[in-house]
Image 1 (cartoon, rainbow, N blue to C red):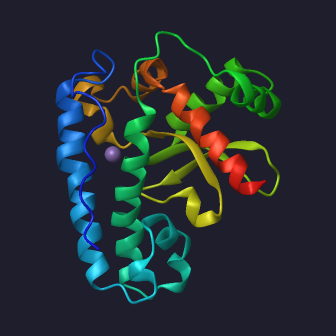
Image 2 (image 1 turned 45 degrees about the vertical axis):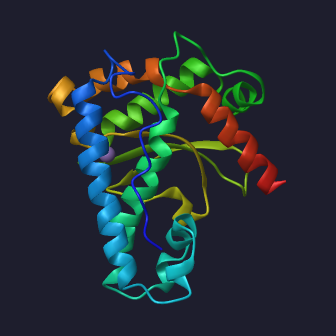
Length: 209
Ligand code: MN3
């Protein structure tokens, strides 16, 4: 199986002024492409049955895969999967907020939507070095949780179900915001695609039911 870089699901300038055309071009066409290439290379060394699994299933099976291919799959397979998950979660939202079941779940886990935003932004600001801030559903408790993971680690490796994610690697914001990660995080709320988050929430609830 050879994976292709999924096309960006909108124009490169669709998220201006929050994320520039230049940032999206480099981030998608260079960084995501490099993870895709690295993932394909790692798969050449991956033994069966893992080699034929879906990328997410490979990430769930990392502890059974021998080194050094395990680390290569964690880094490049994670980078491939995480960025593929990230792009569709971006869309100019004109101030929209979560609705329906997703809104209820956020309120029930974080007291209020505003409190959720504060906690998520705080986590993203505090993440040291490179990594991603996630909103996940924990199937064991049924509640939502914010978590930071380093580098290209994925919550699916821990049995958690991702709903929303923010890439806080410097390559995600440095061209637009230089070292001002906090400002990037604040602006990012304007491009969260809540319909897509709600869609993920419905899908994972169906699977855990
Ligand atoms: Mn990235």
